[in-house]
Image (cartoon, rainbow, N blue to C red; front, side, top):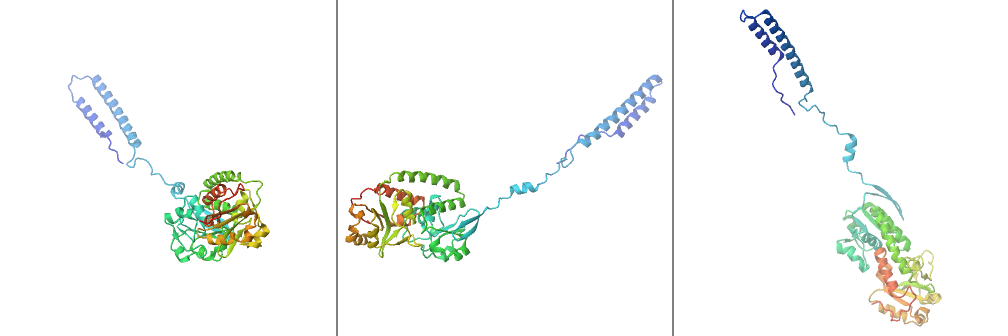
Length: 377
């Protein structure tokens, strides 16, 4: 920016004017006294000095006036300000899981889940998976997956890698038992985490939820959710009878009855509620076939049969046996049937609330009788 200054007379022009006045004075009338001439000379000298001082003052003003560039230097951008303006680099996390440690950069947004528990975990956190594996899923999961546009990527046992590769996933979550052999291939598509869901215990499921929530930046929220859920769980546990005998829980299918031991998910879940599971694992298997003879040997005070609608014929073949009818659970009307897909496949806080309602409302926790005929309908 430039500034314009008011016009000023130069010192030389002022001096010239004064000399002219002196000459004119000298050429005046003869009546002018020498004293007057002296006074005029003295006045002229004073005027000259004043003019010189005025000129000096103008020079000082010129020096003090801002220059054409405002007299101000352009501010220099420091490296610190550049750093502050630059976006922060995504956080990198090293996530430990069943098959090692996986590096995950940033917060995953396009997640493929290959087991129902992981879909439940995401639904609890209001996250929609971009893809999920499905085969006879628990009904409650639809509102958190396919109803919201999740792509089906095959079954849990046989996920379709080609479909998964088209989804631009930034995270894949799989199950130890089902997907251990696929881990190298899945890891080539996206960072992959493997957890023990299918054969994991109740505590395993809770721990996995906490890990996933923390990875998604929802650690504090998950802690609050777990605390609230634990309160509901504790209220249900208060309904358990201290005098109740041991129970057996298992899944009914065409090949028989697969019992779930105290280290299986459902077995440990109900034990955490205060009931006692009658079965230990067989070797490394937390779930195994249990025939009528084996059931008679255990002779539990209560039996839970997990079955699907349409399985009543299978159930009838089991309960009509004389061996079955001699069991304490049968004679005391303590045989309970629940939704197989929910109880045996549902994992996570969403499923747990539904299961708790069944366990309380049926009278199982209180060791109450179930006077109606067992039914899968």
